[in-house]
Length: 344
Ligand SMILES: C[S@@+](CC[C@H](N)C(=O)[O-])C[C@H]1O[C@@H](n2cnc3c(N)ncnc32)[C@H](O)[C@@H]1O
Image 1 (cartoon, rainbow, N blue to C red):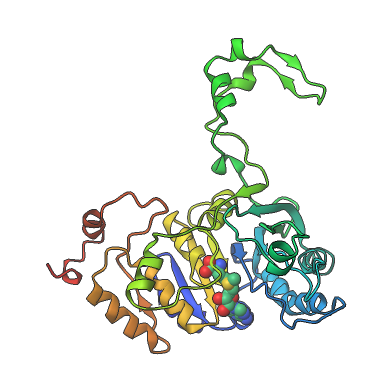
Image 2 (cartoon, rainbow, N blue to C red; image 1 turned 60 degrees about the horizontal axis):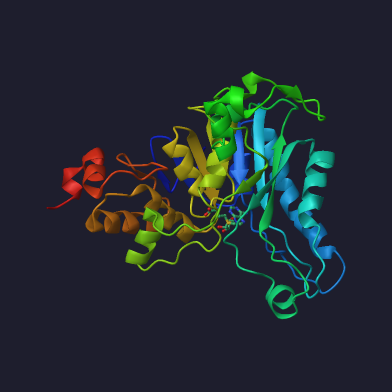
């Protein structure tokens, strides 16, 4: 890339800018996975008709075309789109389905699989139809389109096995007694080997993930430094699922609407290279908090001042990054081993 990143780690780089321009700098067939959650809000609210849906598709299509170009043949594009109502009426917008059709029919993507992210913690909305008039159910599912450049993208569901149900655990423990081998009407042959322990069950395309981040380093430091948190973050578990399933260590993951850089943080934690593009400078500045677990207040202040100047090109050498924060603060500091940053 010609432009300098705002900051970089050993595995990734975060760039401020319009992702359409930044994408243009990437070579063809160079990225393994693009995963992103674009702004959902329909750009210009209209009272009737479906103009806003067409506008949304016209807005996002150039990004889709560029993503198609930069993806490797084995690559995937995972696009999280929240549902929406048409302005002023209890009738759903079809924009997410129009994006799906346009990307497949006009750009050439394949729909590898349609996923649904169920957020059980989602508040009821829209207030008018759900809370006040009570004529619609709570909308708590996002469509997550898994596009691929070819029919056979790199993918391995064994990397994202779901925990076994209690019933399955019993079957594994004592297959002979639990199940009589027989052929089901569906054609599935339930033999004793069905009780083999594979470490978990095949996940479904309904991902139940509460969006309830509450004690992350990112939120803690936003609060401590009086910086507003990004208002539309996705939970780390969502990109984690797709990054694990669709890439291997050393692959390159890109988020073109990076926000608070949840994707970069997840990719770094599981040893994938990453790139993040975000056009809001402030969002990207505070996103560095995700990598500053264990840093002293003084060191963080210095980093913030550096990043707030443009073209910071800040290289973050020592980081502690994990999806499972099991270490104590003391252990994390030792892990980072940057004693000069931690005045006793
Ligand atoms: C839904 S948020 C993404 C949040 C992110 N997934 C996270 O967990 O923090 C969408 C982001 O896209 C950014 N954005 C909108 N248009 C953009 C563009 N043309 N280029 C780069 N970023 C853009 C917005 O500033 C916003 O932060």
